[in-house]
Amino acid sequence: MASRGEQVQANVLVALLAHGKPTSAYKIMRDLQDGQPKIAPPTIYRALAALVEQGKVHRLESLNAFVACQCAHHDHPAILSICDDCGAVEETVAPKLLNQLTRLTKKSGFAAMRHIIEIHGRCASCKNAGAQS
Amino acid sequence: MASRGEQVQANVLVALLAHGKPTSAYKIMRDLQDGQPKIAPPTIYRALAALVEQGKVHRLESLNAFVACQCAHHDHPAILSICDDCGAVEETVAPKLLNQLTRLTKKSGFAAMRHIIEIHGRCASCKNAGAQS
DNA sequence: TGAGTTATGTTATAACATAACATAACAAGC
DNA sequence: GCTTGTTATGTTATGTTATAACATAACTCA
Ligand SMILES: [Zn+2]
Ligand SMILES: [Zn+2]
Ligand SMILES: [Zn+2]
Ligand SMILES: [Zn+2]
Image (cartoon, rainbow over all chains, first blue to last red; front, side, top):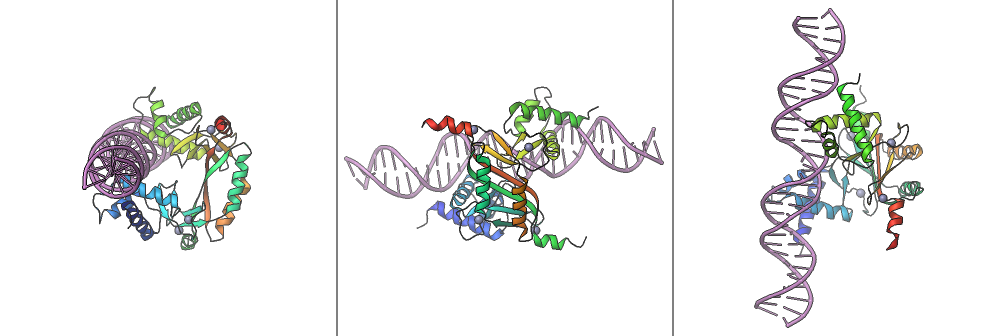
């Protein structure tokens, strides 16, 4: 039997997957309020925190939004490429590059715990779509 | 003669430099309200946007805060290492690494325009200070 | 000057996030 | 079964960040 919390997490994940794009916590809340009118922000944020913890969802710090993880294994920090045109997010996994980053900052004694890499730009299909100019 | 806007930018930059650490727009506003009680959020955000544009200030997406640029000539995007203990931010410039990132994401046709790299962890002095445990 | 334009000020509100407390569920010992 | 303590979840309220919308001031150039 799924606990209530797990049920909320599942619902949140479904909502995120349905969007397939970065979605704010409040947008998710409004989605879930279709079936559960009284659900409140803390419930959403708790579920999102658990999903992020599990690696099933990524938080986009530069958008204050969340997106469902698209890669098979959810146990690595991802490089997130964000199309500013259509909102699509691509994930890239590059452990070597993260190690480079860790080493680079370690030169001054810094101990890296959490890497945030978000790249804004334009995705391939939007680039093609806009090539007519 | 400095325009009003430039004057606000100068004041904001002074406030940021005085803190030397990540500072929220509202904290800066409260600082400036000592001498200009009616200054409002849009004024602060406009000044911050201009300063970020000029490279004199970095925005920390993962903290919703701003910090004065600490490198002499800052026309490269910086890698920002953030100590979660004391709040100190170190800047690292690594054009090669950024190029790697750009190339990596370009494989799928993505055109990178803006790199956001923020690394959370613990700075050298906090690490030493906490070594007694 | 006076129309057109841009910059700045001002008010109000939107959007994001969490503090603080209440209640419910559950488990351990009696 | 009943307490009792603990954790999970719900609920209310509020704190924090950011921008929309409009008003006014300054500046430009015929
Ligand atoms: Zn992922
Ligand atoms: Zn796109
Ligand atoms: Zn800098
Ligand atoms: Zn530190």
